[in-house]
Amino acid sequence: MGQLTGVERIANILKRKPVDRIGVFEHFWNDTYRAWQEGGFIKPGESFEDHFGYDLQLFWPFNLVADLDFVPQTIEETEETILQRDGNGALLRRHKLHDSTPEHVDFLVKDRAGWEEHIKPRLTPDRRRINFEGYRQARQQAAEKGRFFCWSGVNVFESIHPVCGHEYMLLGMALDPEWVKDMVNTYARLTIELMEILFAEEGYPDGIWFYEDMGYKLHPFMSPKMYREIVQPGHRLTIDWAHGHNLPVIMHSCGYIEPLLPGMLEAGIDCLQVIEVKAGMDLLKLYREYGERLSFMGGIDVRVLYSNDRAEIDRELEAKIPVVKQNFGYVLHSDHSIPSNVHYETYTYFLEKGLELGRY
Image (cartoon, rainbow, N blue to C red; front, side, top):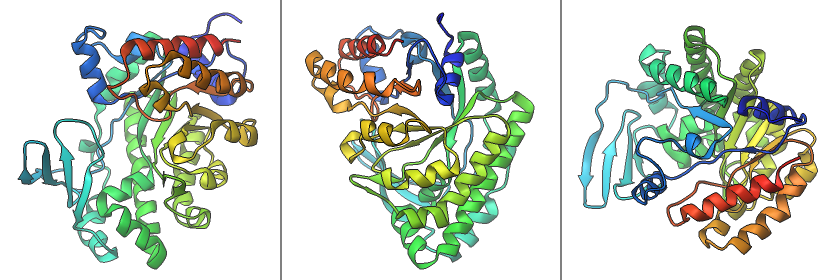
């Protein structure tokens, strides 16, 4: 087989059809980009997609904050952190000096009444929610480079917790599931309505990439039963819509979500990403069980790269790549994002070794 373009390669991988090599893509913390740019490895303004020749390119065009006119209010600021109230009524503390997940301090919405009063009426398909120009430019750039272009954004679980936090959302699943079902349905339909507007005007992407972090270490945030009853209907709605427009769906989830995977397959996902080892996910186990029905991206322990030890990288890649490439359904990616303590030379070695093992 001759060399494929990125769009051809990923399209085949998502269908588990023959390809010339495994795919390649990656996420990085912003700190890493700054460190590698300061070190002279990345040119100012150069993208990782261009620099490393990735097969995919993503663009996140939607703003789902409830109040689009709300100006974030700074409540407290120190040298290291800033505490702000956002347009969802959420009070979040963020680090200023490095990338991190924000601390959930408080939420205006804690129950159905708060949702119905403060959030739901504002969730309309306002054109201001869509970055038309950014999408247009990214789609054109990906086409010029031969990369598989994905619309990217959150699905229902990741839409809800910024409004009420994980604690109130999960309490709602147990104590008032109809409230959470209403939130799921509202965000699923809003996402579809915005997609219809954007794609009608700017053209369709090659695929859809949903971020949906539904687990933590060794456990998902909900039982498989709760997933099927509450979250899966939103996944089915959005994924059915995507498939109805010939768009394959990649779903990202950090954390341990193996118990939810049968339900996610029922909902129609085509590829699972990121398969977080330190949370308890096992790429080889998942491949043995689901490799004929599902493609995979990730599952390579990023902690191995922290060591900057090539022998450790060899062991990790040699144990996994020759196995998971067998059904033509694998894209090389770490199991999270590359932090700044990974040396540039280490990452380039990881990439070269992975692609060497991943050729057919």
